[in-house]
Amino acid sequence: MSTRKNRILCSLFFFSIFFAKMTISALPICSTDYDSKTIISVIMQLEIENQNNGGDIVKDIFTKFYCSYWFSSDLMAAPLRYLAFTQYIPDDARDIRAYFPAVPTPPPNC
Image (cartoon, rainbow, N blue to C red; front, side):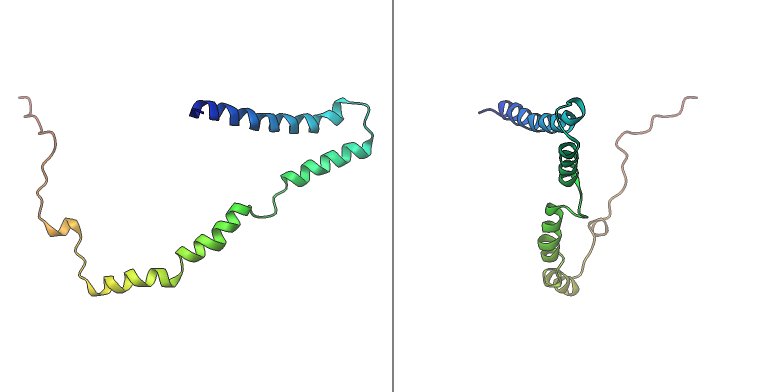
């Protein structure tokens, strides 16, 4: 399957989910067959789905695993130890390079 067909298929899938949710949320308003308990239960279910509990699952996994691994002291200790014994000279200080403009300035008009 080509990339374009995959994009269209995925976008139609997610649009159908969005459309179904919007239909479910608007159906109790438009229909007179439902009682107030059904309307309240539908609204409460939609609120529970959209409620944020202070953090996302992906964020929690990232902060628990990756941040604790990458920012641990053991990982950062090795480069600092080797930097202490080497002399660090920046690239600009190694060679003396004169400044040559890319476009020469034209002579002034007299």
